[in-house]
Amino acid sequence: MSNKLVTGIALGAVAGAALSMLDRRTRETTTKRVKHFVIDVQYYAYNPEELVGKIQSTTNKAQSMYHTFMHDKDFYLEKINEIQELTPQVKEIVLETKDVFTAGIEKEKNSPSESVIHL
Image (cartoon, rainbow, N blue to C red; front, side, top):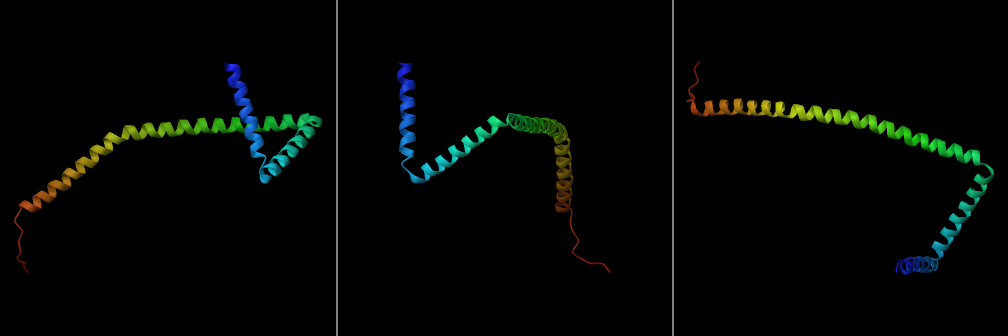
């Protein structure tokens, strides 16, 4: 059964590729890409040290990005923990401030105000 499945998938891929090649732009783009690929393969076949250099350069960049990310991740996690620790304190301060303002407003509502201006 799996043999038929793999064969069916392969035949479907070939049929899909053949149908997509009916489009002129697709054919031209594919031809250009294949030519560039062949040129690159030939170039690196004669200059393998350059290929090794590019691979090492790319690897070094990836490692540098990884280390930067890990450093930044630690910094941001530390800041998140600080915020989580401060949140209850900030909430308490805000509630106390609200209570003070609410008490002041209630006090003004309940106290009689004088409408007479004394000179």
